[in-house]
Length: 83
Image 1 (cartoon, helix red, strand yellow):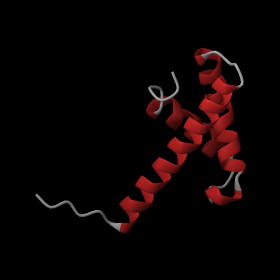
Image 2 (cartoon, one colour):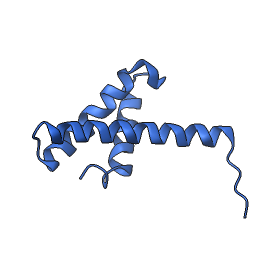
Image 3 (spheres, helix red, strand yellow):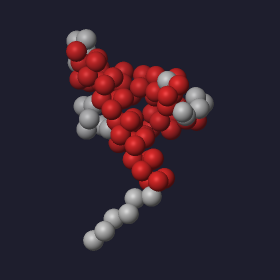
């Protein structure tokens, strides 16, 4: 079976991995700073969307809707990574 990935799919996969790495980095940083896993998870869910959207390299406009969507995305997709 041959799988073909289009440019737009590749872009989505790249963005997914970028956000995942961002969240993992934030979470591990908080653990190294002495936060409990539960505390680090809560802070990561609250902080990572802000810091990611504020980063000029993210190329995603900082809006309330994007912030909310990114927060939900992190909660829904990376819970096993940050718990």
